[in-house]
Image (cartoon, rainbow, N blue to C red; front, side, top):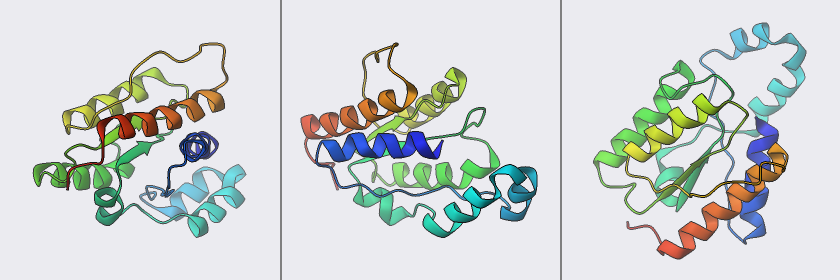
Length: 159
């Protein structure tokens, strides 16, 4: 998931966008480390390198791109705080004019549920089919480029 999120970020940077990478926190870092001992070093590194998204990150951005791991839902415990924050900001009109996208980590139902939730919050989503022959990282890079292209076509987000 981290690799695909980074690939989407690279696509955005290729279009000269400024990006911020954030990570939705685990409900319990210790439980996650215990559940995935083979990923311990990677998880410890990510806990040091990434901070959780804040309202300021979202309000200050023209677009948000989420990269949920396979099998997660917007209602999964790890994501409820984030989507609660988005819902609050949407009710205050602070998401108006913003673009959102979901990185495909290989699970269609996950992408669909996150995309539907983001759309219900009033966020615009890039459209179009991706090259089915491209690998997941290239599709993520293309998604990052499309997000930037859509933001620029729409103009700056309303404040």
